[in-house]
Length: 229
Ligand SMILES: [Zn+2]
Image (cartoon, protein in one colour):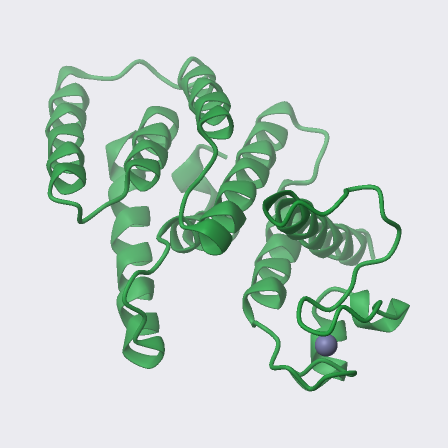
């Protein structure tokens, strides 16, 4: 019962982050009461706003204008629900990992909607990742060498425009927080997800932070020891 409550709360938080970022990007007041359809601007009914279920009940199309709805919000809500069911606890470290998930989710939505992320949000998250480093065991010289090599590779990827500056900094932040092994695994799985997605979507330029975020949320749920839990 408690797990179900945490899951539902996680889906609501994921939906709330998406709503906050969408309104910020589209210069819509955060204080208007009811959300509306992006296409026909019709106010949404309560049942349409229920995370995951709202899209399912509308069969993937707006109830009013039949415009096809993006599957990204319910996907983030689903991952957010599972992630919260494990990390929404009174444990301090779990709370920090949950906060990192919130930061990544906000960045992911900015990246999805604008293909860029706000510098201030990026900077605050990087400081947060650095503070997580102090809760971890001291790095061995071997770890440091691998991390420096990986930093160099990421910088080259960024210089060659294979990775955006935001993607590169998020990966560096994850490496600060969780070390090179965990970051390599996130990078590998996110790249795989991106490639598979592109086979179906065939988009010229894909935002990468959403893939990194979903990988972090999924991996942290399935395999907590990787993140020191
Ligand atoms: Zn509509």
